[in-house]
Image (tube, rainbow, N blue to C red; front, top):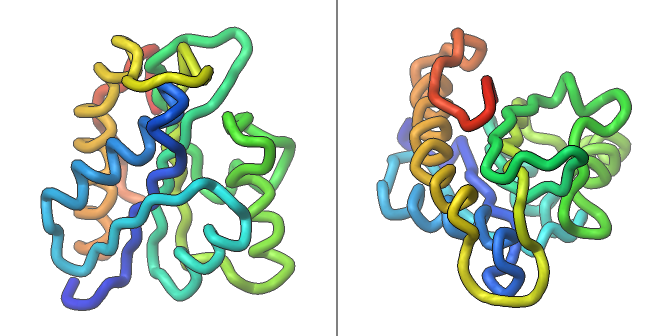
Length: 170
């Protein structure tokens, strides 16, 4: 890729423990300096997400999620097809990616392809630092996103995905 046809968006804040997983992963992806990939950090606000991913061929979003039962550090890969039905994941924010996708559909402001990596959190109260299980998931997320970007760059976005994930397939 020679132009920014892909964007990686880390959602969250480092002031709420595991909610900082998105920005942490985005920072590590930015450090890889992958040609044609723009990296952004977002608070998860719907219109801000639309602005970040509109016009992209591929948008990869990393978000902390609260799930029941929770398996802290579990990573799930959710693509746009699974987002069209009932919510597959619940963001740790009051409004999240699901709402941004629904708004984007109505406004015609979705990327060509959207992939979300949802990470189960252990803590999302006020405080600094990721919990041990979420911190352990960060390298796996970076590898998974790098593989996703590689497949997209090679024109094979639907290729079989194989990368490690805590608690089963992402």
